[in-house]
Each structure stands twice: as C-alpha cells, then as structure tokens.
Length: 405
Ligand code: SF4
Ligand code: SF4
Image (cartoon, rainbow, N blue to C red; front, top):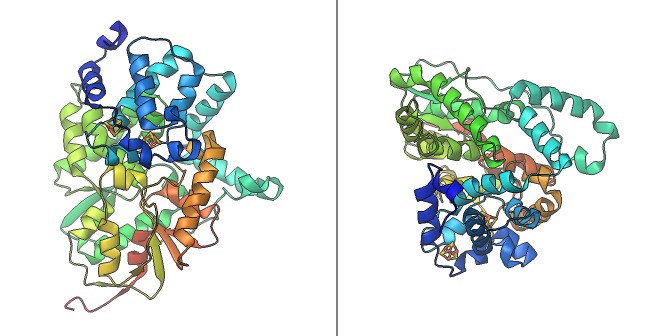
C-alpha cells in the first residue's frame, strides 16, 4: 500500500496503476543499457521499479537508492520491450522526485545541478558560457575540449507567404549550437509549400528541469511556451514542428503534465495534439522534390524518438525514399549516453555508451552520421571523426528536382 504522503498527490491513482501493471517478468532488463553495462538487478528497470515501489510505500530509502535511480538514462527502452505496457518513465519521473526530497543530495551535487538549471535552459546564458569555453579551449583538458562544438554560421531562413503555416520554437541550446537545423527544416517545408514561423517569445521546453526533479519550473516553461504559441494556434497554425526529439517528447507530454492545472489543462492538450516531430510532418508530404546525393548515411535514432515518441522507421523511410543509401546499425535501440545532461552528471557511464554506439554506427564506414536530437548530435560529434548532422539538414541541402517527377 502506498504511503500517506503519496495518497495526497494528484498522481496517486496513476502511480498505483503503474506499479500494479508490472508483473516482474524481467524482459525489460534485456534491453536496458545500464543493466547491460553494470549487470546489477538494481541498475535495470525491474530493480528500479522495486526501489520506487519501496520509496512510494514509505519504506526506508538511501543515497544508494538514489544512485541506482540516477544511473537510469530515462531512455525508455524498457517501455518498448515491456509486454505489459508499464509506463516506467512516468513512474521514475515522479518517484525520483520523492526520493530526492527524502534523502537530499551532497552540497557538490546540489551546486552542479543548480548551475545546469541556471544556464542550459536560457539561450543567452548558454551562449555566454559557450563563448567563454571557446576562449579557454586551448588550456582545457582534452576531454572537455572535445565537448566544445565548433561555431556555426546561421543559415538563411526562407521568407515565404505560403497559406499553410506551422510553428517552430527556437528553444534553448539548439539554436546556439546548430542554428542550421531549424533553418534546414524551414527550407524543406518551404519546398513543400509550408511556411515555418519562429515563435520568438518561447523558451526551453522544460525537459531538462523535469528530469532533474524540478517539476515546478519545468511546468512554468511549459505554460510560457503555450502562451507564446496560443495566438498563432488560434489563427489556425497547422502544427508545432520540433526538430529535437527530446523537446518533441516533452511538448507531447504537456497535456498529461498540466492535466491538473485548471487554467492550462485544455490549452496544453491542444498544444500537445499539434506537436509533431519534423519527420511526421515531412513523411506526410510528397517527397519527389528532393533528391539525395551519393553519400552513405547511418541513422542513429534517439531514444526520445523511438522509445519516447514511438516514431520508428519514419526517418529511415524518408531518407531512403529520397535516394539515400542507409547502412544497418546493430543494437539501434540502445542509448548513445547523451540523455539530456547525463553525460555531465555521470560521465563515465555516458562515455562507455558513447564508445559502444560509435562502434556500432561506424562499422560499415558511412560518410555521415545522421540523428534527430541536438543532445545526441553534440555527444556523438564529440568523439567521432565523421560529420554528425540532423537528418533534416540532408534534405535541406539536397538539390531540387523537377517537382512533376
Ligand atoms: S516493466 Fe514490464 S518487462 Fe519489466 S519486469 Fe515489469 S512487466 Fe516485466
Ligand atoms: S529508462 Fe533506459 S536506463 Fe532506465 S531502466 Fe529503462 S531501459 Fe534502463
């Protein structure tokens, strides 16, 4: 039975139902990256569900409990594998917050987390930090140097007057690290007869705060984004397009996360229904205007795309339809180790996952690695000699052919 302090939460029934749905079969352990690396039951989904159940029942929890939960990448590979449909990610997000409140964190970890939350979700602060890091690059240790991306020049945004209109939120880090991604999306949609409008007053999607157990601020970001988009939604914007699958997953969850907020519940549901990964938008259009070059591509499907949003095979089909040659990837379901700020908080585990992922991606000697999330892109690029791009940049740059063809 769940503890009294859990009974007071609006999520009580949900938590109880998730815990009841797990039949402890352990199938999920087979596809869990941390269980594969560490071989400890408590570093796999079944063991973590057990720990979360203990915590929610009010049994003693410790820093060790917290460590096993922290090691989880929130990749949700276990959800894809689970035959009983256990919503592990939701259980973890709520349960981890409760464990954090009960056991606290060391001063060092508190400072680290506070700094991340104070900088990463704010584009100007992040841009300033990156500027300083680039200045200091020559004197930084190699491991840190590799994490600093090269400066990118902005790509022109097509100025179109198409009747079909979709929205894009510039977000936080992506527009600083790789402005070419959204610009490529705008170019691609322009060719398809769709105008992509930037919603300037928007901000971070809130995923970073949410996964660091800071739910109040995450929901504030959500409300701000809904407010910024609302006038465009009322004017008939067809979709909210997302080019970072991590943010896309968060946008699609706004309806669920704000369902107890009277003022925002309805709007959040509408917002989430309009949220579409760029692959969902492009796949529904006529792609004959695009033609691939002869480069060999390997596609790394981010966890937030394949396990979170359950979008599988869509990007691959688009690239193949436009003529790209795709190489196969072993263990494509496994996380690359980026997982939001996981690479900063647990660098050693993250590095091992990255090495394994790059080995799997590069074995067939592709010319380019394509992905669908800025976090994965930066993480893969930090250790690969291959160029890593967002897949939409391949279409954004391909030549236009006869549209009648
Ligand atoms: S989460 Fe699913 S796969 Fe894992 S132990 Fe529970 S029921 Fe089995
Ligand atoms: S979310 Fe990923 S790392 Fe966490 S338990 Fe599930 S499969 Fe393992």
